[in-house]
Length: 193
Image 1 (tube, rainbow, N blue to C red):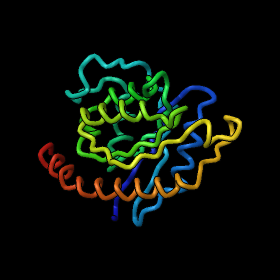
Image 2 (image 1 turned 180 degrees about the vertical axis):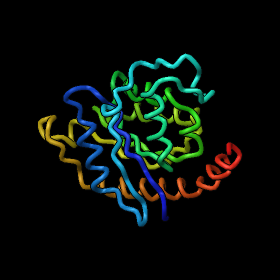
Image 3 (image 1 turned 45 degrees about the horizontal axis):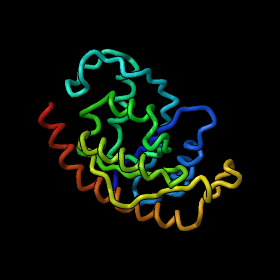
């Protein structure tokens, strides 16, 4: 696959988070010919609680932070979402960031790398429901990391070797789908012009 850009979105912004380390691991190990991977840290965008007066589906963003976030997300053909599980779901910061935009997400592909006491499985499943509403096609392959087995003393990230194979399979699925959806995005852009 060539000429694809994949954003690795770190979904937690809280101090002491594990997500940035996981995102860096994903970026260091995600491999696909001709595909550019970029780490996107939500903390860098400092999005407030959703403060747009109009629904995102109208595409009439008023705030500079929304416009900057939209420009960044629009750059990519697909995403790898790195999410912890907080209270049986994804963090509010990630849900909030997703809610800010609409068309920028459409007809793109996504994969999920989750972590938590049970591998972040519930955050993963909740995120899939949200992605479907945003017209993002999520791939089947998961990478689910356990805070009990993939962190030494709950602090040093030491992922099991099996996760590298899972990640590679995920990247293969993601890049195939992102490439397959590219003509739909080109068609949407032509209609909007």
